[in-house]
Image (cartoon, rainbow, N blue to C red):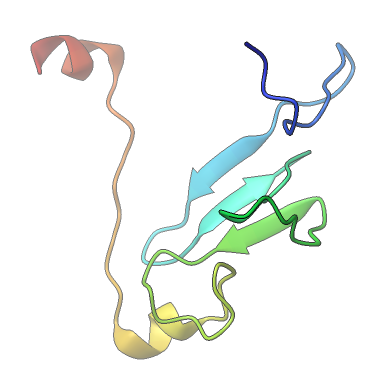
Length: 86
């Protein structure tokens, strides 16, 4: 079953990228729709930053609070070899 709230993509559209910023937010680049639990959409641009530290006053968006509170996170994606060993 397809998710009707997902943004439409075409063969010429770049894929959406979600990047973990060291000691900071999640960066989402590309077509994406952010929807709350009740189904309400947030206004977003082509790039958005989502809070990971939990301290933002503008949740779910990042407001830079991670720097003030000393948030530390630098996860890396596992390589195929590391995933096999797990």
